[in-house]
Length: 255
Figure 1: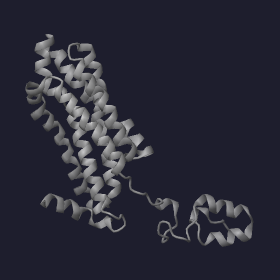
Figure 2 (figure 1 turned 90 degrees about the horizontal axis):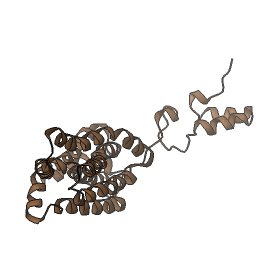
Figure 3 (figure 1 turned 90 degrees about the vertical axis):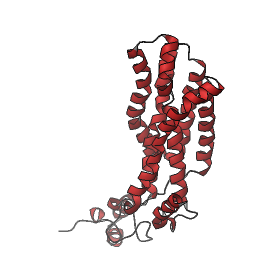
Figure 4 (figure 1 turned 180 degrees about the vertical axis):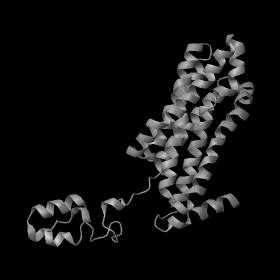
């Protein structure tokens, strides 16, 4: 309860401009998605010793099996982060979650083949890219004075690896070797639906470089550089009128 009040306090500076407590809601959803994706990302690690014994793997083969998702998830954050900049977290969080479902289900049924495990582990690395989706989402919803705390809350999602380590082997022993993968796949699919319905990207105000000093974002008196340039082309009279409201770089030069 106290932790939730801290999160609410952290969103207090921006909830006035975002009705319904959207910063807090999006922070919670991002943290949940991060945790679930990291849970899936770390599924192979706890099962490594058992797979080594069952398939007769060498230490190097076991290490490769566990390392492939980690390497792919780490390097994959670069393109996934770029896609998040382009399409937003509302699209990318469900997409990453659903894309991770496929290798998780494959691992449930392909545990008797080492090459198949390597291929499935490669695509399992997609789950590790969720970090690059959540950071820009949370950063956009919170001002600099509260952003560090919000990102710290989001970082709790890294505990998904601990969830995998604590539960995967126990669930496999109690309910069968496929059970942890089927459970995580169902949770990922459920989260993808939840994120698609509830997650929202923060609206971005025009950058400071695109508006004159002293004119607030979306001010009725503000004109973009493009509209200013077209006004100047219409004649000197229009240029005189637009010079007072356009950025300095767009104002007509004299002398």
